[in-house]
Length: 405
Ligand code: USQ
Image 1 (spheres, rainbow, N blue to C red):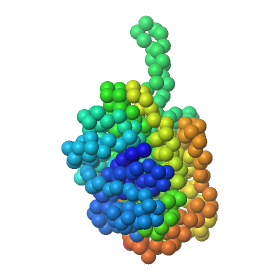
Image 2 (image 1 turned 90 degrees about the horizontal axis):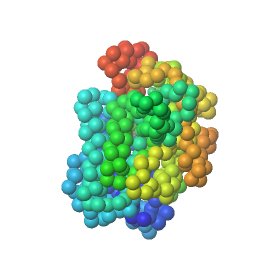
Image 3 (image 1 turned 180 degrees about the vertical axis):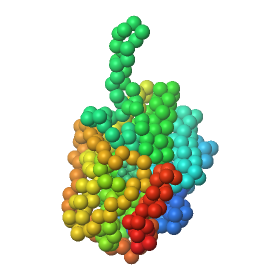
Image 4 (image 1 turned 30 degrees about the vertical axis):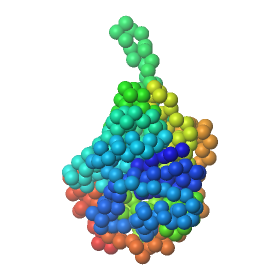
């Protein structure tokens, strides 16, 4: 299959490109390299040394004989170029990762909020619009987030995208419907993914676009089968307070002897998935495309749920690390339960990789190998959700101590 991977230079995009290329698909990466620019803006770098995208694809070709083509296109801005590219190349499937994906980055300032909304919403809308204009019936697979649902449950499992409801008519009968699960984003970033859902609903209904939306949990791990093959195929690995995600951060912190940065009580429960399963899920979703006229297909792309403090305690036990209980820079429930359905991927044959010591230890090993690249001052999360929270965090002695550590 000819597949366009939008955002194929990123943390999940790159291993997906390799995984699908390895399966024999013709892969085209479209990317504006914005993630690399954000590293420059923030003054941080991936823990792992990453080569240019051109160099990465050259190494992949040398290793496997397979070509991955790279096209420098900004989806949010270069609408005409995107449209011309789609019209000329006519991929059969498109995987859309091309969005700013960090919640803390999206909450840093008014500029970052505007950037995240402009970039993410325009990228998605430009893509949908262009597909209609060039009459391309490609299967669009989008990387969404579990965060569109919010995380609190009322003792019921979060279904896969749709909620069955009964509405009482004026005549007193009950009409049954399935509606998009009510969205409750907890950051500007998560809000853009909620807006994406509405765009998808409209274009599927109005233009018959075939769309799959993957509501992914927090990805952990760094290697996949393909990124292990050569040191220059290595994936990016974020540890900083904006882009590093919780479990990977704890593992890196443990590796360099830094306290594990638990926000609040650590009672937040979240959904997780290993990066190897993430790329496998995309492969499975590609094989199960909706038909023209179908509603958007939604999968919950996660394999297990964990409480943040349990993860910290697990990592502390494994490595002897110390836990720092910090004021939470985010506005989120201090404690929540989370039960999520993921029956569809299990039915398609996903055999989940769950948290286990060997894989956790592998991340610690990678982190130790590259620990000389860590700037410890970039580890604390300083993006606060509101001005009041910023004040609290700023004046907290433990947080101050870490920032100057
Ligand atoms: N947290 C800590 N300490 C840290 C970092 C995070 O306690 O050092 C806490 C946060 O306060 C939050 C939880 O861990 O309660 C998760 O934070 P995160 O940064 O790991 O994940 P999040 O901001 O939710 O975003 C990540 C990805 C995003 C993806 C999302 C899936 O960056 O692209 O969509 O996970 S989900 O969380 O299921 O919405």
